[in-house]
Image 1 (cartoon, chains in turn brown, purple):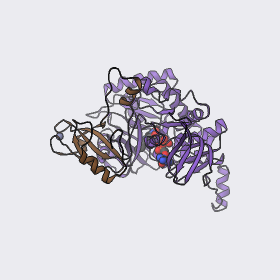
Image 2 (cartoon, rainbow over the protein chains, first blue to last red):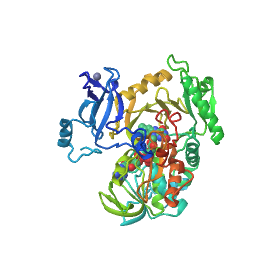
Image 3 (cartoon, each protein chain N blue to C red):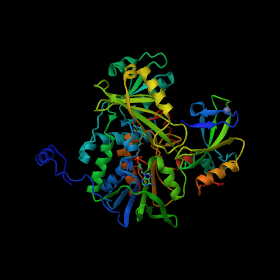
Image 4 (tube, helix red, strand yellow):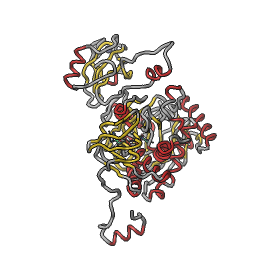
Length: 109
Length: 414
Ligand SMILES: Cc1cc2nc3c(=O)[nH]c(=O)nc-3n(C[C@H](O)[C@H](O)[C@H](O)COP(=O)(O)OP(=O)(O)OC[C@H]3O[C@@H](n4cnc5c(N)ncnc54)[C@H](O)[C@@H]3O)c2cc1C
Ligand SMILES: [Zn+2]
């Protein structure tokens, strides 16, 4: 079972306490965006075999959202961080680079 | 290829079974093919088969990184039905189901199609309305299904407790010509027929790059060298995103593990397939006597073919309420496959942004039943550029907002 540290309340939470919220750091489109941009925002996903940034909600705990960096091939968790950000913190990306050299993710890597 | 028949069994028995030929040839890759299919699962092999059978295109290679049928095709719970809601779905799933009826004869390979009937249980009022609507839609589509009462359900499945405290059975959607087939045999039968047409099935060879020139595909790189092609079909289920990335585009797909398990073998006790979507469980009894049980998908993306254990616990707990006798059974094995899920729970059979590259994916939790129809349509799409079976399932539907919403029909993994 996946166990994630909730950065909001500090609990080590079992997967059954959490709700997966899908890919993180998606750019939200709005009025004025064209169809192609909306398609990217609503449907297109990275879905990598490897490093994945994702949203989680501590549903049966503090109820708040947070982000996690995780490997979808090994299920290794590189770290969790608050949701109020557009990029993962440097200590997490450094950790990923050390373990998965050459990883990339859309705009940052 | 020597035909399989009762006579062949007698002949080979007389020779102490020393004379059976290999079902498919083991060949080294050629330098170039007209069409390369990536992925020797059911959908990839069926695509190759109908390219040869319906369009005479036989300079074809099917490249597989593991062993053929070792992906989801060899991991599913083999339920076959066509009682979907939307017209394009009914067309392709019913095409597949009807091809399954004669597939053993067509391939000269016993795929053990068993049209034993499939019930989808309604255990909430929402499901009652949903399935009655599907039954009406199916009537208009020419797919024979029927809404049946709780007592009819009980008659078909005497081991079921229809008065469970949490989820009583309120009726069911019954498709009498749905059923099961032997999943490995479907892959093996298509592979044997493809090999017989002169196609190359290249196992233990992973595609690692897709080569392009001026927006058009020219070939693939593999762990056994480069191979050129005019057209490329990507048919890799859970790994679709990985292959799309090699070709430089993204997909509206997320890959998640889906699990199944089987019990110890017991005497025959249930001769239909039962799906209980509310409690996320579905079950049939195999010819060996094992109860074959399908569970739910993990909530998060992963490529590990195992899945989280708590889903097994939830599935079994829920099924024990509906089938009390299950509580006495030991479970033998559990496994997982990586399923490719789209937002509208419908597949993608489409051209792609790269000229000459076609993709067949998004079958998610329920593509075994579709293998013959999908191969039929995909072959036409590759050969002619479009097919009445696949036209509605293009990638463009996500730009146009023209979804084929099957989240009710596919409400559970199946
Ligand atoms: C537990 C479970 C239960 C299911 N139950 C049902 C059911 O009851 N009824 C139903 O209709 N459907 C069911 N399904 C869904 C069904 O199994 C799939 O939709 C279907 O088998 C997909 O077939 P495929 O040929 O597209 O993929 P697969 O059989 O997965 O084949 C894809 C192949 O591509 C290969 N591949 C991947 N990457 C590469 C590469 N880079 N190079 C070369 N080869 C590559 C893989 O090794 C694999 O063999 C279930 C699935 C699971 C996991
Ligand atoms: Zn918390």
